[in-house]
Amino acid sequence: MKSLVETLKESYAVAPALKANFKEFNPILADVNARRAQEGDGPVTAEELRDAFREINPQTRFEPQFTLDDRTFEAVRTIFAVELPPLTPEQKEEARARVTEILERRLAPVPGSLYALATLGEALRTDGFDTREYGGRGVKQLLKDIFDGEIDNSAYDAAHSPHHFIHLPALHPYGEPAPAREPRAARHFGRPVDLDLVDLRRRFEFILTSSVPAPDGWYELVKITPALKAKMFDFRDMGFVKLKDLLYALYGDALEIEERGDAEHPNKKFMRLPDDDQLHLLPTELPSSADTDAGTHMPHPAAVERPLPRPAADGRTKTALEKLLDFAFFPAPAGRNGLDIAIGHLAATARAERWYYGRQDPGTNPLLKNFLTLTFERLQYEDSLGQNDPRHEPKILVDGRFATFNTGLCDPYNEPIYALFKQNERLSDSRPWTFMAFVGSRAMGQFDMTGKFGARLPQPAHYYNSTAELTFDVRRDITVPNLDHYIDHCNRLPFDFLRYFGPQSFDYDRPRTREFYEDLAEAIKSDPQVLSQIRDQIEMAINRAKGLLRWNYRRAIPIYYPKNKAISLLLPLMLGNASKPNVALVMSRTPSGDYVATTIYTLGMAYAGARLLCGPENEWLKIGDVFGPIM
Image: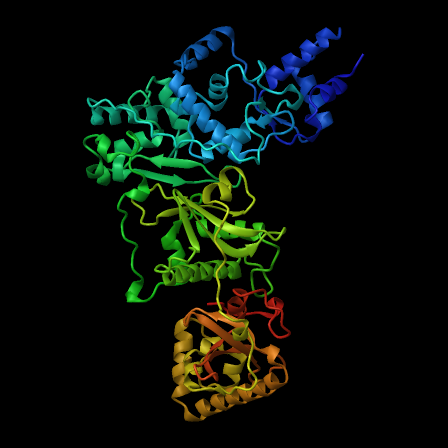
């Protein structure tokens, strides 16, 4: 007599490695008892079966099971049972051609022409194929209808249970060129012209507020459609292909949809009903078919005229961070910063690196945030230069509903990491894109990059034209035109140096705010003796650094200087009695070939600028020694 564990290992070969949920436990229990009955063994209980699976793999989990009495079960089945209309020959031919083309291009079967149903459905959805357009069918039912007679009666491979695999032998092997097919004609649906929009909105809101829980006023989209079906409110019969088509028709510019995902469910979407002060924005009549896309689809948010981004305060040029936040919306749960969450995800995806300065990790990856925002600003600048050049390949690539750019970082397998965005569906938002994820070039499913953008993905930011720009020319001189500039930026000078050589009457115990350093700069410039003393110290440090640079030109580290959109070099300075560099001098090359000292950086600013080009490896600029602000 075989033990229950032995029977399970023979029947469900995938179980010992299973780490996901069993979502269909009752059919498995029935199947096991049927097998045991054939072998003359008695039935097992549900708890015995669970214990046996856990003995094989302790990580096995089970979905909650609900027990219904016969009367309740019949009532539930009556409510949700839907008789699907048969497909016409034209629908079958169209659906089969489209499904075949997608699968031959995107998916590789396992031996035996078996396709994982979950992966197959994701590939269809990613390619914009909605199986529900064919009478409300799901993926499984549509495949059975259009491949009738060409798949096994038992469409799912028992050897791989509980993972479902469908057998589709008619497809060409993955990797072979798919036969050329005519592009599918757009499907047009007729919407009844006599729909009362006000009544439709009233019925929808009654069902929504009475059937979908929303303690904070936000309704999860995935729960709305089942609630509508349960109340016999079929928006597809009204001519709306998708729920969002209905929502845009009902609420227009007043519609608010937000992504409030978390680590476990990153793509959760919520909507809320308009406030009283937005009622004037509600549409009064349905848009005509001429105003819609493909008959019933409401105009996509990207096609709607969005509000203009707000200008920077005081007419100044926007920072790199503001430019990135103007480009995309970064969704986040309530009370959290979406960009910070995305930066944390990027830090976990990229090769391990220390993304903070000082001795304590603040948990916000400030160096990585600076790296990403300046990288994006540089990519925008490169695209602006190449917009009239037909040979220019966009660095921020847009293709249909998706956009991407190369972050300039790589994952632990040295594959480039891309930032992936989709069109922002919030009509009232000026930002055209919504952040999805940081992904590698080999990602699959909804993050498949080659499926969205083709084989040629965007290149990383490029900062120089010749490697000669990255090296100091020891034959050239260094000019320091204005030492008072460093006094005006005394917040970048070491505090101990300022306290020792600065005005003795100044209150150095005040909080070190912007006003503190502005007052200190004025106090230094108003005292000629102190000003002369600090100037002498800076000149001595620069002359000493020049001498060391003649002996070792590698002490000059290249950085990208955003203000000039060009490469500069960093020269280490030791102010006061310091035994190692405590600030960095920024040198830019002039048209004559000489160098001019343009400004002074803290070591934090120096490291952040140098990291844009590569991870700096230098005896005087190491991440463990970096302190001070980076902006």
